[in-house]
Amino acid sequence: MHIIGAFELDISTSTSDDPACARIALQKATFDPSGRVFVTAKCLSLEELEGQINVLQNELNEIRKRARREFQVP
Image 1 (cartoon, rainbow, N blue to C red):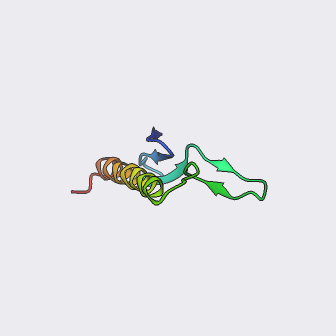
Image 2 (cartoon, rainbow, N blue to C red):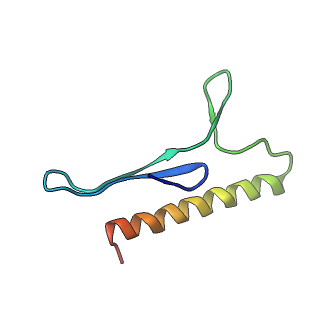
């Protein structure tokens, strides 16, 4: 597993019996009483929310890069 931040990349390499596979899991999250999952802290301004979105996008971009390396996609 490759832990990035809010997300982790879980990769299984290929074997003679199974192809390689990957999936993304939440590494850290906050749950409210109704069971909703939050992947950011509370944001009190648009700037804070945009910052959190940028962090999530950066993390997903890093996961994509790592997955490309694992699957050896040019």
